Amino acid sequence: MDWEAFRVSLKLAGWTAAVLLPLGVVLARTLAFRRFPGKGLVEAAVAAPLVLPPTVLGFYLLTALGGNSALGQAWTRAFGHPLAFSFEGLLAASLIFNLPFAVQPMQRAFEALPPDVRQAAWVSGLSPWRTFWRVELPLAWPGVLSGLALTFAHTMGEFGVVLMVGGSIPGETRTLALSIYDRVQAFDTAAAGAMSAALLAFSVAAIAVVHGLSARVGRRHG
Amino acid sequence: MAEGLEVRLRQAAPIPLDLSFACAPGEVLGVVGPSGAGKTTLLRALAGLYRVGSGRISVGREVWFDGDHGVNLPSHRRRVGLVFQEHALFPHLTALQNVALALGHRPAAERRDAAAGLLARVHLEGLERRKPAELSGGQRQRVAIARALARDPAVLLLDEPFSAVDRRTRTRLHAEIAALRQGLSIPMLLVSHDIEEVARLADRILVLEGGAVVAEGAPEAVLALPHARALLLGDEAA
Image (cartoon, rainbow over all chains, first blue to last red; front, side, top):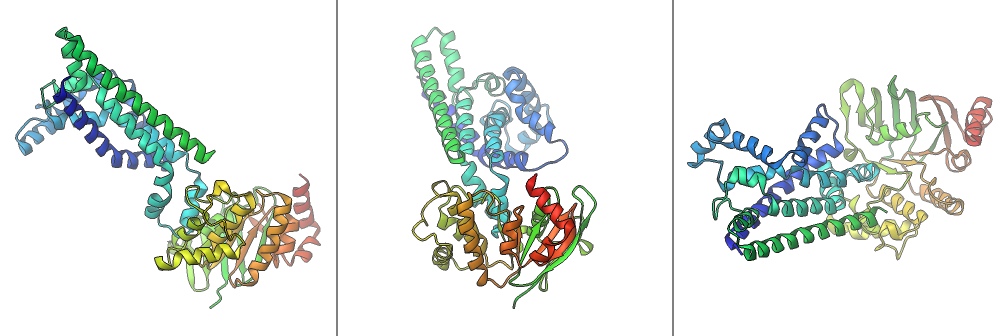
């Protein structure tokens, strides 16, 4: 078992989920409740990582974050090290390829709120901000948690994008999935097997959480 | 301190509206008319849930909407109580919490007792801890009425409040509303497609058709008008 890679994966999954929690909720809520020009385009962009081959996504992210890009150069000037092949670069890529996993379940949850319940909150004197905290978020919470569980499990197992952008640097960007690949290449099937079992357990646990929460939503609104 | 409601609304599209009326403090104004006459749009406009092209809505000296001067208070800043057709209770909160949430203008320490008092007023003692899913249709609608009264509204709006309950419950709720209104000195609007219900509860009736007032007056006087009869009873038979 490559504990260092396990730690990198956990750190990446944790940070991705932590950043996507507020970001995903704001984006999901906007897409669920607002109508604006180009909304379809935004939804398509959010969903794109679902269908793009991870290497293609990784290639574009590498181009966008690399030393030749404006962003990459600005990052190097500000922090003294390049964004690509660093943990921060990996996190930036992880945030983008996890957008649909976080946003879509959250968006469905906000869309499922009956419009008159939100309106009832407003006419009960609650400002839109208080309505969000007291009514919308508590009712959409299972969907928000689902999005986070999916994001976490997906990040733990992502391979293609991580390899393209992170480059498998031990302790920095080598995640569990990359370590499994390395171990298989080295014919170390025992280690690969142990790490695969750990990832499998994580994925099953995440799906169990998602299903448990969807059932709860079904009971509440049914 | 009693303040009357004055309404003047006008727009051509998407939902045509061209009406003006007043409702005195303590008066129950029944709003009736066929489907698509603009009844619900009118209530939503009063509650700030729908923006009308032009016109003015005021309660006493408080102006909620003035199209000419760009005034349009959001719902949460209008002192309005709205009872929705399908109760629209907060499903994750108990009956007591549903009512207490609308008491945001009162000090936090008072809210619990005030909410319990309002639930007692609609005869729901002992059911404070139940969530909406654990209440009957009639009980839910009573919680909704208590919640609408909780924010000390300047106007009470009832949007087909009894359409989702059975006939027996409806008759009981009619009696309670009739009793409740005795203690309220605010304008009250009751939208319903049930002309008998409106005739029983309202002091005055407003008949809407195509967004305009086509008849107005005491229930018996309006029901004596051939055009109103055809419109309302024809709609009921349909």
